[in-house]
Amino acid sequence: MVELSVIIVNWNSRDVLRKCLKSVYDTIDVTFEIIIVDNNSSDDSIAMVKKEFPQAILIARSSNIGFSKANNEAFGVSQGAYILILNPDTVLFKSAVNRMVAFLKTRVDIGIVGPRILTEGGMPDLFCKRKLPRISFEFSKIFLVEKMLNKLQVIIPYTRRALYRYYEKSEECECLAGSCMLFCRDVFGSMAGFDESVPMYLDDIDICYRARKLGLKNYYLAEAEIVHVGKYSTKTVEYSKMYDVLARQAHFFYYLKHSGRATALCYKILLALSIPYLLTLDVICAPYFILRGRWREIIWTARKHIKYADIIFSDRVINVL
Image (cartoon, rainbow, N blue to C red; front, top):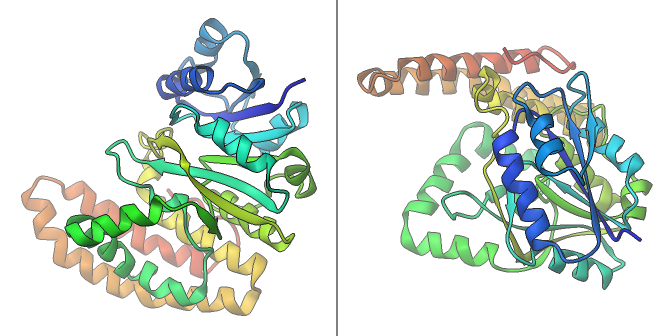
């Protein structure tokens, strides 16, 4: 009897996938299976898995079918009573998953459990415990106020300590990070898994919203810790520089799906107002980047902000390049 199914969707992440799989085998004590869906990697990920982890179930796709569809496909062949969605660029600390499973067994009111996620530098990943999107929060996000405050929070000793304390507390929260999520099998099945129609970076937000809509709680378990590299498989391609565009697009579709067209229109208006403001900041910052020989960075940043216009004038998923 398999107690836990660990599902990993991989795309060109061979080196970190190896570390991730090793941490799975080294730290999980319950009976488990690993299901890897490879989205047509070109970096010998498949050969590595077959050679070094032959016991893993490998589904090799001939094309990149995306995060949501690949996870749902793996769920269809899984046998575990619990389902762990895990990114390939993560490393599990000892007992992290054991603690998550033990906790979920005791709480029938929980929809999803997520761990405390640390960056490679040891800082808390701000996405592992957060609120769901609200239009009232969007001004500070789009106009970069929140980003600047987050940077100051890390620099100032007092606020940095407060930040650590916040992420050291286990509690119910609205939204968890998709890089590591634990579900009861029945819960994941009742939601029909991830919504395959939503764009990148909306998958985890959407499923957290839907779990709460079913009357279930999402729970952040600080006693379970992992490290997440973040954006590993996309950092070598150009659209990694367009992350903000993908994030803005995800939020637009979130409002369109869950709040209606009027709220989505308000979001578009905020995006439209932000473009001249952000381009002005780009001009002000340009000399700094040019003097440091990073002129390509300012070009990509300006291009990213201009790309917001595509979200404003379309209700379709856009090409970020």
